[in-house]
Length: 310
Image (cartoon, rainbow, N blue to C red; front, top):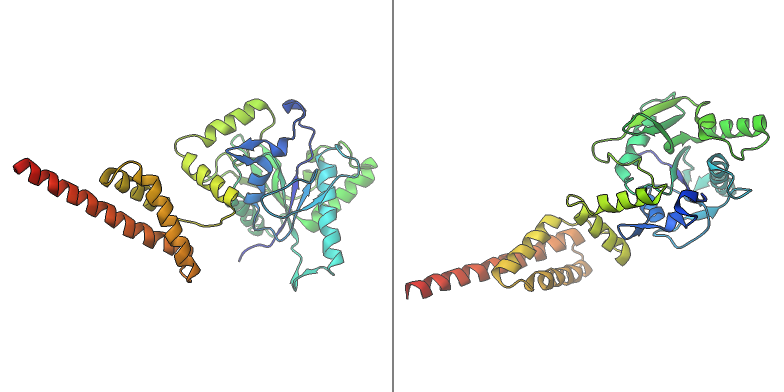
């Protein structure tokens, strides 16, 4: 059973160690840090970003702390309050479905966070009925309260308690919030070992950009960036397309590789208009073009053998 959840993304920090630049808008692998985080929580029913509004890869709601720049606890409170206000305005119901009681909380500077880690957190909370929060832990075992899921009721209880005890939430550390909750720790998984890596300095940004361009990840990152830029959501077998490009380059001519893959994409789009599933259309068109490229190569090899034997 899939756990329903809302999301709060904190994107309003001062970024002092980055010289005060707009950190959520800094690009890593061609995509803004904020957009990368929003892609990781695409399954949220509702998403509120606490920060200055800006264009994003998908629609979100926006809010700010009562006093801007007063810290993560105050920002989290503002995001949770915005979601609670929406639910109350809708009578606690959205399109006939009760509002989720699970809240995903993320900072906006996590370049390697993916949906797999979000799902691990949701599963971790669901597996412990008594737990009030599930926190990601990094490779050193440190809790990451801004890569976590919280049960809405206990979270509201602790926020209200801190507000009463400290006469406000300004400047409070997150450990005061998590210290009052029954938590379960979720270690980073082998599928996303850098999920908790955050970008606080230009050195962090440089490290993230270098990792993105690592040979083992660069193609997936590039394809994701292109799909985002073009506004398409299509899962294709990249191995099939790479094999096609290889066959076209070797069997016909090197410039045939990009031209052939373009034509395959065009043919797949036409087939999809007629009702064929997009991924199936790509696979079918790529298969036909690859077979043709191999025929060209075989014909060339046959002719070369004939010319050699006279």
